[in-house]
Length: 248
Image 1 (spheres, rainbow, N blue to C red):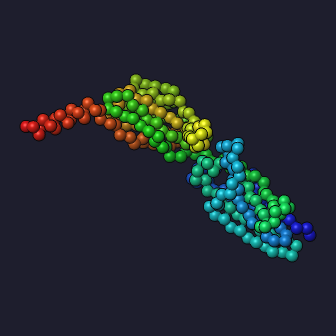
Image 2 (image 1 turned 135 degrees about the horizontal axis):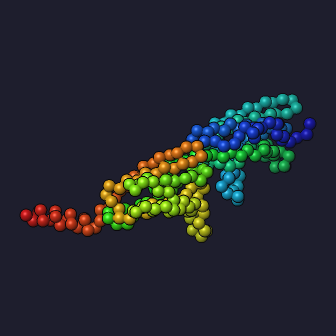
Image 3 (image 1 turned 90 degrees about the horizontal axis):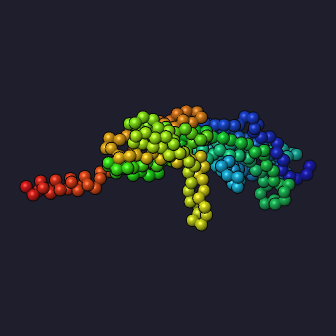
């Protein structure tokens, strides 16, 4: 029998698909036969958010391997458990088998590519806030979800959606979040993340802010914890009152 590596069995692509964030678990497996030595199996991943992304090895949440040495062939089987704890785990998976120290192409083989999509909503992140008392202010948030979510700001004027406004509040359009990864390169999109801003006319001390995010599977409600800053005038007035008290 000739030497080489051959795919023997693999995960059925029909058993994979879309998984819920933080609760979905994909169970992948593949097996290869080889001669004259057993193969080493690596699980590979390529994210779906970039057309130029390269394949890279990733650690399975749980991995099991079994070897079966027969007269005509050596069979190695690998089981990989993938837990969907991030939207960035959406992408394509495959396993690669190689016989160590053998560089000829016949000593290497791959499984089919398995597509996995993770849907859900990650916790909202505060980018920045500027809330001076009795002056115009703003709150900037990062919302990460797949697919693109619907966002609702809850204010004392009622619920306001992107590109809508009330007497005191206005919400900007939901736009893709960008970041500067390398100083000399252009801004790059942050996968699955969006920016939303609430503009406030004359911030009040008792203003409270909440947000609802509607995704494909559920609706998440978040309280936005921010602090209203006293104006410089009020601080100066308070200082004058304290000085007068001490003076008397």
